[in-house]
Each structure stands twice: as C-alpha cells, then as structure tokens.
Length: 560
Ligand code: ADP
Ligand code: MG
Image (cartoon, rainbow, N blue to C red):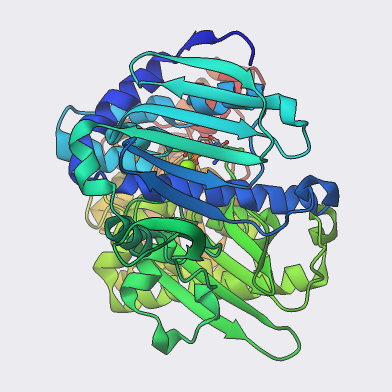
C-alpha cells in the first residue's frame, strides 16, 4: 500500500451529489441498477478490447457481476470482472464530470425537487447515486492487463473530497463496497429485497448477475447463483415480451431514467439474418448537440456483445435512436475496421433506418399528439435527414413539421402535406422564408404581399433550416421556393389586371430606379421595383442562389 492521497471533487460533482441525495431519495433503490449498469458496461468494454488482445481476459472470459451483503458490517458489495480502471482513469471518471451538456444541465435546475429529479434522470444518475444510501463508498479496481501491483483504492464519504491509494489487487475488474447509512441497513441488507431490486431493474442485463445461495434460514452461503434472466430479450418472440419488460430493457440499453416513447422489434430472415430492437426516447439527452456524441446502438453477433455505439449502424440524423442489432451473419471476431463499408452492416443499417422511419410515419398518422412530442424533442435533428439520406428523402420530408403563417405561432406543427392541402387554386409552389429567429421570419417584409393574398408561408428559423432547404427542393411535385430570394414568381396566383398595373408602376418608377442604382453603385447587383411589399418602402432581396443573409452574417462573424 502506498501513501494515501486526498483529492477534491470538481465543484459540479459536489453540486450533483447534494442534488441527487435530496431529489432521488424516494427512488433510492435505483442506485443498484446504476452500479450494475456500470459493471455491465465494464464487461462490454473488456469484451471489445479483447477482440484484438485476447490476453486481456487473463484466462477468465466468463464475465459477470456479483452482488453480496454483510448484515453485521452494514455493507453491500457490487463486483465485476470487467475492464477495471487505472489510477488516472479513476481520477477522471470518478472525480469529475466530463460529460458534455453538463453546463446546460446545471443551468436548467430550478430548485423544485420533482422537476430537478427528472432532469438528473435525463442527465444520467450514475455512480454517485451510491451516496443516496451510503455514507462511505470504497472502490477498489485493477485494469485488465496491468499487474496486480497496479490496483487502486478510492474512498469517499461524498462530501467534497476522496482519497486514493495504490493497492495490491490480484483480481481484475472493479469492486464497490457501500457502507450503508444506519437507517438503510434494515431495509436493504436482506437477500429477498436485493433479489427483487435486481429482477425489477436489471433482469435483462445480458450478463449473469449473481448472489450467494441462501440456506434454509435465508443466510447467504458459499455458492453463487444467477439471479437475473441474463438472456437476450430481443431474441424472444414478441408475443412473450411484456410492455414492462420492453421498458426496463430500454432503460438499460438507453441509459435512460424515463420510459421510451416507442419501439420497433423485428426479426429479419432470408438472405440476411438479424434481429433489431430499436427505441425512440421520450426526451432528448443533454448532449444531443454534441458533435462527438456517440450513437446509441449496441451491436451483437449471435447474442454475444461486440460493441457499443456502432456508428455505422445508424445515420447521424437518427442519432437519438437507442437499441440493439444482433447479426447472425457477421463473424464473432469483427472489428471496427471490418465494419467500415461492410455489405452486411450496410444492409442492416438501411433495413433499420426503414424500420425507424416506418415507426415514425405510423405514429404521425395514428397518434399525432405523441408524434408532436417526438418532433418537439428531435425535429431539429431529423431535419438533417434530407441532406444526409438521399434514398429516404421523400419519406423524411413527410415527417417534417414547420411553423407557418397559417397559425402564426412558433410551434412547429404544419406538415408539407397540410400545406399543400390548403393551397388555393393556381398556387403550384411551397413558399418559405428562413430567418435567424421566429419573430424575424414572422415579421419579414417579404411576407407582406403573400399575407395580403392569403398565401401560406412556412416560417423557418432553426439553424438547420438553411441546410434543409438547400437539400429539399421539392415535395410531391411542388418546388420549395424562398420568398426572400430571386424574383418572386407567384405564377397563376396573379391576375392579368395585377400584372398590367405592375408594369405601369415599373415604367413610372424608371427614373427613380436609375437614381438609386447610381447612388448605390457597386454595392448592389440590381435595383428593381418590387411588388411583394405592401407597407414597407424597400427590402433587400437575395439572388436565387445566394446564401441567406443571416447565414452570410454568421460566416462573417466566424471569420470567413
Ligand atoms: P456513465 O456510466 O454514464 O458514464 P457513471 O457515473 O455511472 O456515468 O460512471 C462514470 C464512469 O466511471 C464510467 O463512464 C466508467 O468510465 C467509470 N466506471 C464506473 N463504474 C465502473 C466499473 N464498474 N468498471 C469500470 N469503470 C467504471
Ligand atoms: Mg453509469
């Protein structure tokens, strides 16, 4: 044993700890699910790293999680033989919160316990939840492949600091000992109670979770037995799986606290054989906008876990999808390199994308209110779709929702089909305007004439909208046209009389136009009489192929 070192928690950790203990107490037993989930992640990581270095198993490849308690000592222990941690990893993983979205999380806290508990759930409860029931936690760990002398012991009472020391630790993996608060012992240090928490929350962790066999008096003996089902839920027939089982499994694969919004479970047979169980979360995670955010699909081959976040399995615009894809065709020793450009992967991916889009389409049709909650959370991500997934462009376009002058509110509720259904006779285009805020779009002078004529215009103000409209130029045979770009051609909507009077106005203003042109010189490309304004005297119009004004400003600010 080397000298003990005392280190301080990052401020955010202290904040999170306090919050967690206060807000989650009524749901305290979830700490066990969190620790088991971490243990299971650690086993998954080891399995993945061992694909390229078998020696990491150190002769023991039966990965598992053991849970045991000692009523006299007042302790509860969770132990795994997964990847373990080095000293540096303990410091970064257990002493700090490196997660993206951390700032947003703390910004949104309100002090209202029920609301904050929900937010913590969304943010991720994690390891610190141990302190809901424990007043001291001792974590001993050794990373796979490192010698026994590289064991690390971490200990804390959860109030500001922790100690760290190097210990001799022959066993690979991580052991976490919770020294339970006096008042929790009676409730938790009991065989039946622990088994029921494990089956409630962790039944479908596809790894054995073991406890000691008990004797006739209910006292734990020497032998171990598996407590959970430890089976691959997705391989069972749909008809035998209950809603609750689906939901619990989601919380495990999705690392989520709340129920999923919907799921789709499919077995594909034929030239290719695979099973997919894909979930839509109800709420966006805090790191949805992080560019490095990982994808949430776990890849299995014949029920054996291969890797997490296999990004080749889901396109970026569906990065909120969570779940499992289990292939019968891939070799068990696949690596990330093999997955690149692999034909089997590509086909599983396009099949899975179709399932997710189909699920959304059905929800939009049959449960529009539920679909709206999905859209409000993930719509801005789905809008990346038409630019990323050419093959499914039409289907994605049907799923899009926008704000428009029809409702004149910021809520994005109008589909392109709704818009077309309301088009007056003679209108053959879908009109939209992009701006950097909803109000700027709604109050744009470019809309004056269209409003007067009662023609609906989509009001686009999400950052992604400029990208979307540059890739979605047409829907159902109608082109999408910006009312701020080029000559606004209203086609059949204008009458012969209107056109005549416009020509007359143009003639009358020729002299004025010339004078303005001379005054502005090279700064503008052209000066024209506009017919799109009814109350403003003038507006700036972009060339048909120019970038939107606010995009130009954005790029300028960024130094381009
Ligand atoms: P999350 O699981 O969402 O990353 P946690 O707070 O649960 O957050 O865990 C923080 C980190 O600590 C994990 O990402 C992992 O790196 C490390 N960790 C926790 N438990 C274990 C374990 N049993 N074995 C190895 N690493 C672990
Ligand atoms: Mg965790």
